Length: 170
Image (tube, rainbow, N blue to C red; front, top):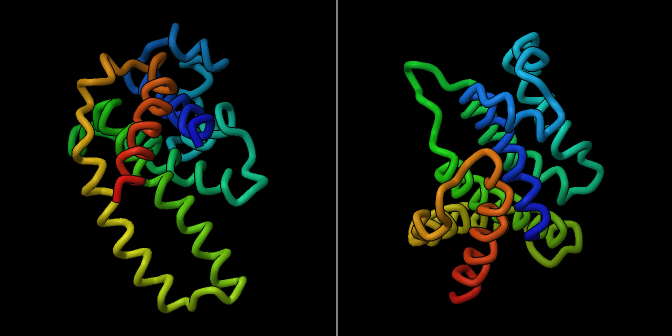
């Protein structure tokens, strides 16, 4: 899960670099400002996710792509009416959503195996989303240092590691 978090963090870092017009940081991801500027916002998001995450060939990869994609969209589509979230807040939201999405993969597996019903799984999902969000609010983003486009992958992995400890302590 830490490697997945780092990959998702890298996608957020790339989006953050684009949003800040940081050509040097973007070049580390193998893309240029001109290349991204030539795309529509939707295609820009997809291109960044494709570059950093690749195709989602496994349910866990699809969960990662969905969680990272939400944050990439918020950053890329930010405007004067809805400013871009900070890189740190984007990472926190990503870690929470990735944790939830991977949990949903497990719930789907339980439904398919006949271990739980769809109704019970739906109740679990609602409670899980609230619980994860509340737990992750307790993590101090300042403890991870300055979050930049280049460090997003490491911060995401470290925050995920700490989140797993915090979530396991239930």
